[in-house]
Every structure is written in structure tokens, then in C-alpha cells.
Image (cartoon, rainbow, N blue to C red):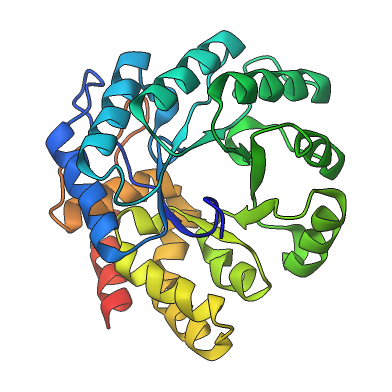
Length: 296
């Protein structure tokens, strides 16, 4: 087993209105994930709002994680930034704090070419000196990694995994077969997009990079273990329990919904960073109903 396998839970990063990390609230979320038995924590991913945080606050979040759960559960940290030198600095911070791995997305304002992304990743991977997962998230970055670029990056020391969006037409097996032919043995292929998690794991994906596991880790872990065991009936049954939440994720965006879930669970009452607005008040009863459906 490698670092990038199983259930990786991605919590929100609670902050005040000025963007300062709420250490106590973040600690509650991290300890909840650890106690549930998830395979890793994905800190400062898209769900963690990394793009909205200063370097100091990102450092504070990492230090909080390593102080509270470091050594108890692997911690993977997002180091995406507009500039390569900024991403390098973040990678050095993460390594110095003692985290276990890196997650890197090609953040940009000017659309990037494949060569620019290749050089960006090669430089950060060399600087970080930790196992690194390619973050293929075209929904936010507007950059889609070709299979050829992933194969090329997989040859670089320290780049050992990819976090993929859900495949077109749901062809997990076909996509993974192509990627595994083109990448080194042991290169880990995982998926985000929570509503496709059961299908992806049943098809043989190495990891589920999960938004909902950031707040409902025990429930997400049950689904993960059923799918990993090849129990399609049980995985399907558990996935059905999440369907109302998946619908909310698709309608409003999982980032907004997660803040509403945290409030409904009384874990923290924090608004998302502006300009992101909270979930409309009229939708919050649907969140509570969706949670009851998960627990039914």
C-alpha cells in the first residue's frame, strides 16, 4: 500500500472573516477524521480553500494538523499556487512541518500549456522532496491533464500518484487500464467526484479523494471498505444513502454545502471565504434532511 490509497478525507479549513485559521475548529475536524479510521487526510485541497489562504495561514493549518494528528494518520497537503516559486515555498513549509505528501494543482490566471505545467510540477516535486500527487481538477483550474502528460510526469522522482476527475461516460476501467499501461508500476490512480466513488473503487481505483469524508468520515469509510472488498450490493446500498447529498453537491457546489453540513453537525459555524456566499437559507433544511438520509 502507498500513501495515496484508500479513503483520503478532505476537510474544510475553518477561518474567521479575515482568513485566519480557527485552530480549535480545525482540530475538531482533523481528530474526527483520525478517530473514524480514514486512510489519510487531504489538507488544503479545494475543499480546504487553499486558494483563499495566505502562506502564513496555510502554514498554520499544516502545523495544527501535524501537532494534533501527525504520526497518527498520514497528512497530504495541497501546495498549489499561481507562481512556481510560491508553490516551492509552500512545499518546503510542508516538508519542514513533517507532513507525509504533497498534492499539486496547476493554479493559473493565464491558461497554461502542457510544457509549462510539466516544468512547474517537475520543479515543485524536486523542491518538496515528498511523494507528490498530481491534482487533475479541470473544474477549478480549467486545465485538463492529457494521459501523455500524466505519463511524462510519472517518470519524475517523487511524482507517484494522480487524483482524477470522474471519467467521461463512467469508463473507470478503460481509463485506468490506459493510464496503467503508460505509467510505472505502483503509480496510484484515484478519483474525486464523490458521487462516482463507489463505481470508481469497485472498478479498481486506488483511492477515493473524498469531500464528504472531511465531515462524515465514518460513513464515507463504510462505503469505501465495501467497494474495496468488491461488495457491489453493499457499496450501492451505502451510496444510495448519500444520493441527496450528492444532489446538493451538484446543485450548489460541494464547497458551499460542506460549510452548511459543518453547521448542521454543530462542528463549527463558519462562513466560506468571500466572495463565496453561504448556502441559501432555504436550502439548509435540505442539508439536514440529506444527513438524516445518510444515517437512516
